[in-house]
Image (cartoon, rainbow, N blue to C red; front, side):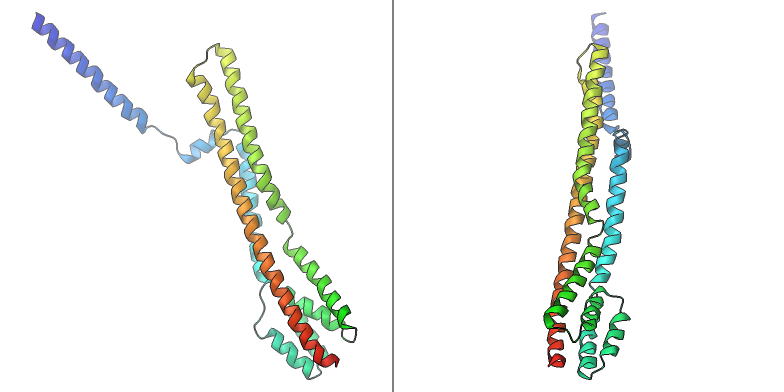
Amino acid sequence: MQLSWILLQITQTGGSQTGAATTVPAAAAEGLSVFDLLMKGGVVMIPIFILSFTAIFLFIERFLYIRSAGKLDANFLAQIREKLYSGDVKGAMSYCSQSKYPIARLLEKGLTRLGSPVADIERAIENTARVEIYKMEKNLSILGAIAAIAPMFGFLGTVMGMIKAFYNISLADNISIGIIASGIYEKMVTSAAGLIVGVLAHMLFTYLTGMIDRVTHKMEVTAIDFLDILHKPVQ
């Protein structure tokens, strides 16, 4: 009888340990996909998603425009020089007007001021350059605003989660890890998502700003070379 009782105890102990061993891996194997985790962020995730899509759309649209604005045929300035030195001012203006690049519009504006003092020609080119730079910077302020607003939405979602957690505690009249964590971890997803979108938008904004700086420098160099070309016909 005593031996049977010992064997029974060993069997029960082994069975309970086996059940616990199978339960832990099952619980560990259970997880959340990225999509499911994002969906647990709640309503605040909707504006964060909208901001992320808007940031990507603005970046692609501005990137294509700025890249096009910085293009110029390598022989463009040489063609202008050749026409001006041969006295074909109208041909040079027509050549600029047929070009689709913003830098050509700067030179065309300068050609329309031929006969005026060089300072007036330079001022006309600078004014046209400001207009072209403004066109390149269009909607960049929205991208900068997204970089600032997205983390705020994420923080708002976390605050709402804290409110929900404390509300659940007040209803249950019980402070337990399960009650607190259920409201907080879901809403902290919004903080992570908001920060990611904000950092991404700031990086895209900085990249586009650098592109505009490079195009502006190219415009300045082209304008200086153009004024050097005008120096000989003016004399």
